[in-house]
Image 1 (cartoon, rainbow, N blue to C red):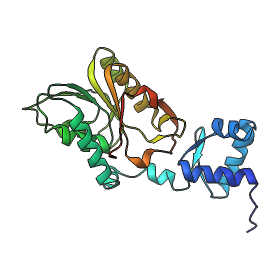
Image 2: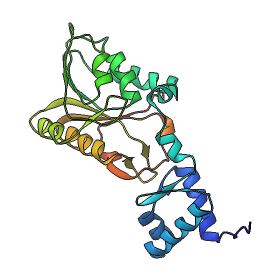
Image 3: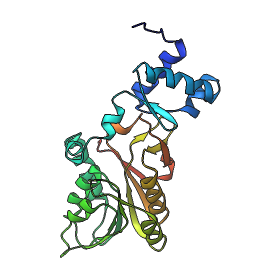
Length: 237
């Protein structure tokens, strides 16, 4: 089989993809000063050569699709100590009796377990697993009902958006898939992003919970700017 040599731009695209985890066509077009169509052709060529994985609006490493398909059990065994540090720091920052929105994801599940040690929290979440971490005898736990979005017990949909518009929290705890170097906080799932945005708007304080592995990575779409969060909890000292 004939191997087609890569252009300098294609080599650079591969390098960016490996470092960031996800690159968008628009960002690449701006970075290289070429049209989006030119970048799209590069991505198609690299995909056909088996060098990267095409996504809607961009591309990721060849193993990115498998990463996204990791089941819930596998994700709970990734960066466990970092997630526990994030959870502990978050629980320390949330006072007894506070009203809290808890986002979906394994970091949030670790955080819910840590928050259960506090007293009298009023919890709102679209994660069934996070909700189950709390003792309902000591906390007021509310699951925001919607469509089941995955086997991890995450819920999304217009019902949740409508409910959030009528609520106000002391804290919104938000998760993400990546944080770009320019401060854009990113995620892959548009339906989950919609919930995150409304929850942030309903909160007095917004905390971003992200293990160090999330920094310098990208994803499909932006949740918010880093500057829109009152605090970033990454488990570091």
